[in-house]
Image 1: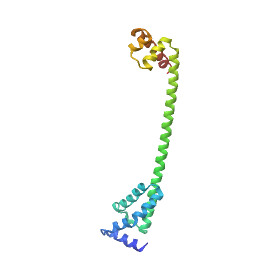
Image 2: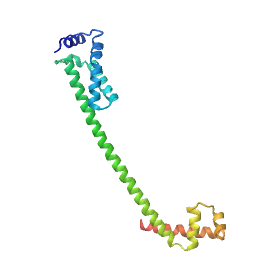
Image 3: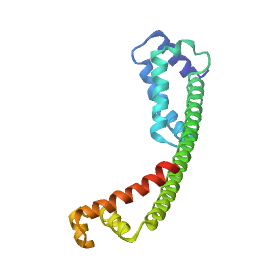
Length: 178
């Protein structure tokens, strides 16, 4: 053990008021630099180092140190950084799996919508011309009944009859086949 570390650790164990502060001042900067190099993230490195000091003090880990203070702190740092990295890679794997699953759902949804649109187009194209025109005006162009009827040159009731029969064709196709 380094003589200064040995004395500093003795002071911490004895409960001297400024001893822990001296440990912090002596090692904080070098530990945060090492954590940054291990983790590649300065903020995360600082969090790890601060947690080491908090645990050292709150959980009184200093009472059980049998190696040099420097060795203890560096070993703690490496262990915590490795834990963070493994948690990060696990998180990353979960995120990748979720992203893949979401993309597959989106792709399948797009495929289903595409297939549905194709089937709807087939049903629309099988409608008689006036019924198809009525359907397009009201449901696709979203015109009001009166406006669509005037454009087609028929009464509103006739338009409603065409729409009712068009909707019936869709129901038959999609409720009976799916």
